[in-house]
Structure formats: C-alpha cells, structure tokens
Amino acid sequence: MSFKVPRGTQDILPEQTPKWQKVESILRDLSRVYRYKEIRTPMFEQTELFQRGVGDTTDIVQKEMYTFEDRGGRSLTLRPEGTASAVRAYVEHKMFGAPDQPVKLSYIGPMFRYERQQAGRYRQFVQYGVEVIGSADPAIDAEVISLAMDVYHSVGLKNLQLHINSLGDKETRDAHRTALINHFQPSIGEFCSDCQNRLEKNPLRILDCKVDHAHPLMESAPKLTDYLTEESSKYFEKVKEYLDVLGIEYVVDPNLVRGLDYYNHTAFEIMSTASGFGAITTLCGGGRYNGLVQDIGGPEVPGIGFALSIERLLLALEAEGIELEVNDSLDIYVVAIGDEAKKKSVELLSSFRAKGISADMDYVDRKMKAQMKSADRLGAKYVIVIGDSELEEAAVNIKQMESGNQEKIQFVELVNYLLEHK
Image (cartoon, rainbow, N blue to C red; front, side):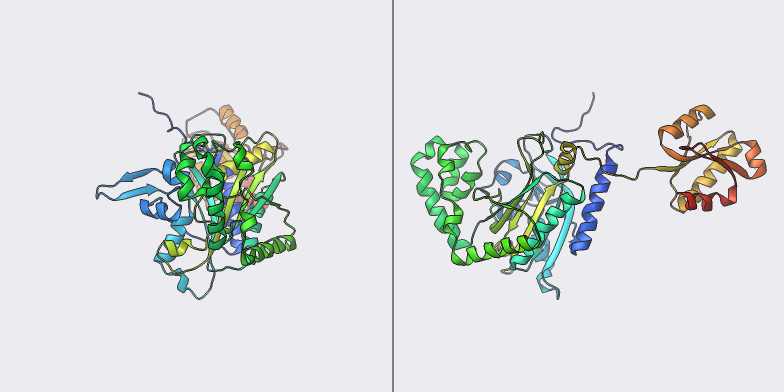
C-alpha cells in the first residue's frame, strides 16, 4: 500500500523551507519593530469558541471546520483562524488587567479549513496574524493596516491594492440589516440555499456569497456606507486621515464586508494586482471587532487585527517573479581519505559548528572525486582534503571554490581563518 499526503495539504520540502524561514524571519522582525508580542495557542479549542467567536452563519462554521469528539465526549475543533483563540487567551489570562494597554499580540501557525483546494489555498495552511485589544483609537486601525502593508513591502511585492470600508456600529448595522432584508426578500427564491438561510440571520453575509455574486440584486443592494451613523462616519474619516498621514494609498470599497461575523467599523483587505496571480486576489484581511471580547466572556473591550496566509504571500512573490535572498550556504566541506582522516574530519566539523560555521562531510564512503562533486553541488565556499600527509603535517590546503585559490593552513588556525573569510 502506498501513502500520499492528505488532500488539501502539502509537504514543504528541504529545498523550499529556506523561503519559508526567510518570510517567517521577516514577520517576526516586523512584529518586534511594531511591538507585537508573540502568543502561541493550542491547535484545537472547544467548538463553541469558534461558533460564538467566528459566527454560526459563516462558511467557516457551517462548512469548513474540522470538528471531532474526544474520548471524554467533548466537541473540539482544529482552529480555523487565530483571532478567537487569541481573544480567549486574553480573557482567560486576564490580560485586560495588565498595566500597559492596549495588548498587542502576534502569532504564526497552522490553521485548518475544509475547503476546495485552489492555488495558494490549502486545508492546512500557515497564517500570520496580529491582534490589538484594548483600544478604540482610529490611529491603531491605521497602524495595523500599516503593519500589514509593510509585510508585503518587506518581501519586495509592488502590485498591491488596499481596500477599506466601514461596517459601522450596531445602529448602522441594524438599519442596514433591515434595508437588506427588504431588498432581497421579494426575490430570495432566486438565490442559493445558504443565502436563503442568511436572509433573517445575517443578510450582510449574502453580499459575500460566491455563488450568487453576479445576481443583479447584488449590484443594486443598499450600501452599508449609506447608513453610517455620524459617529461611525467620523471614525472612518479619522482612519482615512491617518492612512493619508502614513502615505498609504487605499480604495474605499462599499462591497467589502469580510467573511466573519465579529467585524464592525473598519474592515480592510489587501489584494494582489499582479497579472497571472489568479481569480482570488485577496492576500490579507482584517478589521475591528469591538464586541468579540465580551461575546467570549470578557469585559467590553475593543479590538482590531488581521491575518494573512504565508502560502498566498509566496504565490504573490512567484507571480511578480521575486526571488527571496536566503542564506542556505555551506561554508566548508571536508573530504576525508582513510579512517584516521575521517576521525580528524569529525573533530574539525565539531569545532567549526561550535563557532557557527556551517560544515559537512561524506557519510557514504565515496571516492575523493565523488566527494568533490558533492561539495560543488552543495555550493560549499571552501573545501579541504585530509589524508595521511595532511595528518602528518597537521595542516591542509584550503580551497576557495569560486576562485580556485588555495592556502596552506594549520589545523589549529582553520576556525579563525574561516571566521575571517566567511
């Protein structure tokens, strides 16, 4: 019987991981610069957390969650997104009592959604996200958006477009909800079953439907921005002012509603405009969730965040033809001829690695010529050959592979030589 990777997942092979490590390094460095502290939450949580936190009318909860019952009869779910878990941890560990507010969090880790596999979309995917909990300042909305944009600029992406919208406050949403029901109700039979179910529960989600997106009523649907309260309008204007101060260009998109129930006020998405990227252009999405902490059992505390898929970031790099500079170099390869030489090689490798010098040697008893070819394939900067005469002299000729130049160096001086010439 042969085994294959489960559908919707992937193996990230050794030749691919340096790119991942580079991106993850950039993300962690940006988090440090912006002062977002890393949080690590479990890969599974109580199912009710996501039902309540993400929303039971969302596609994620209705169709995409990996839910199972453990041996104690408890319903658990592999996390489909990071916000609910971060907020749960915030509430459980009473972070709202910390002296420094707001609490700024970041995370990187696998998420799980049972959805149709497409380019850059998997059932297990790696997500980077941030959450700011404890501030209702429009300036923090702009900071979060700025961080998201900086992620893509830091890897060299240029074909980007930021879409923003305001989902308003409760009064805004209630008025818009009534208008949407009145708009869609006479023709709701023409829509998919999901939209029919959403009409009374959450009609805003109809606008996010992938099945009926071309229906004429979608285009003429009441715009949420037409129902913004004075307070919501002022908040949105402030967010835009701060984005202008930061020099961040944006498109106000009244049709941007996001796919999760907990959003209000600011919502945003970053799109790739690179040709050949694919039909689904969204790279990143986020927004404000002022009622979520309270819904999960905490105090009435505002929050905002975003999340992005590293898989889709890498796909955008490919679409723009950008190669990340990764350091996967081999500093020195040691060619050993004979048993005594091999013992010395093992000793030298240990001394090199102790000083942060990447080093390797042959472990399958190949001839000298084959070992030299291996050093070349691995891209070694330097090669040394150790045989009986080298052992006798306690010195080797170290060869610089690119230039072919050689120098005779004593064994005891090799570490210093490599540190000076790395």
